[in-house]
Each structure stands twice: as C-alpha cells, then as structure tokens.
Image: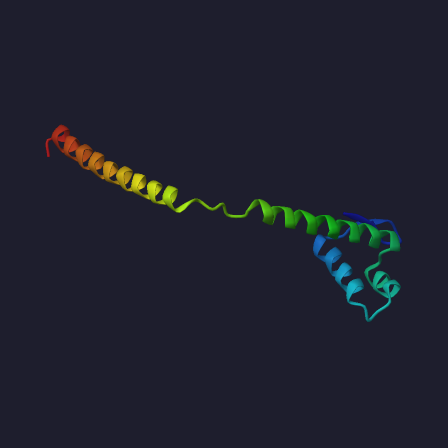
Length: 107
C-alpha cells in the first residue's frame, strides 16, 4: 500500500501498517505523534484502519471455510473397511507384479 509521507508517496509494508494500527489502538500516545513518527497522515491512518478491518474479516472467513467436516461413525467405519480392502488388493497386486517380473527377467 502506498501512503503519503509528506514528501510524496512511499510503500508501507503490511507489518508497519499493522504496527501503526496497534499503536493507535493501545493509546498512551497521541495519534498525531504516532503518525508523525511514521511519516504518515490522518488520511493514511483511515486507509490503514480500513485495511486492517478487511484483513480481519478475510481471516475470519478463511477460518470458517477450513472448518473440519464431520462424518457419521457408520460412514467412517465403512470407509475404513473399504480402505483396508484396497490396501490388501494393492499388496496382492504388488506381489503378483514382482513374481511376473522375476519370471520375465529369468531370476
């Protein structure tokens, strides 16, 4: 994000933007003092606050999408049995392949 630093525009990294946001929320110093120290304007702070709000909402939405889905126990047990059969078949096929390979190669 490009912000006005008084002498033109400069790129302000997201971590610095977040630090400015935190400093203004914590209190203890005047907002004007914080902005001066970072070389930013009050308009920049409005933009930073807006971006932090957007980032927070996006993070919350991502967490909601990542939520694990639950599967009924009966379905889980059926899938585990099916997986066991597939593994067993794979072992049998691997052994058959190895035997065939030995025959072909004369070993």
